[in-house]
Length: 188
Image (cartoon, rainbow, N blue to C red):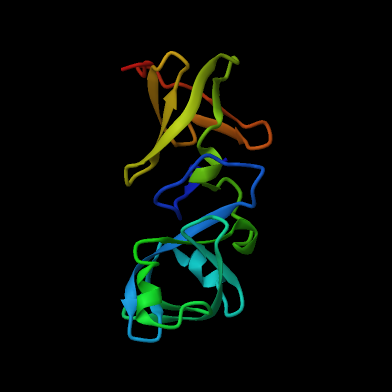
């Protein structure tokens, strides 16, 4: 099992909702560009490369899809042109919104790598089966992520997302099996 656990494509994620088509945030609209409705997009990762002309992206409302006319590099960012955005005034409405694509457009992840949205809300149990709570937040520390596990009584436990602590992630069972390191206590 590898020490890599999270693919952090999204700055803000919500727990996985299995009833709706899953979307992945791949960038954020910074501002309009020019007078033809182009949008300057800051890409979160290379996953924005999955966007091609005639594909769809979602901005704002999860149900609000927009057909892509073009996407191209521009000064370290990307210029995105949408079919329903033909001038600067229309483009202004998208300022600050996340650009999302359907998860099935991103291709499979390597084994042992997960999106934040897949981890949030999972039940966390010790090797012996004792429930510790569920993942309520993921802290990005640079070296490795840290899972904030909140118990029903409100106590929090911070678990580093490293292979010696996170033993198994079972998305079907919605559960993470962990080994708590010596000296790490709940609620501190």
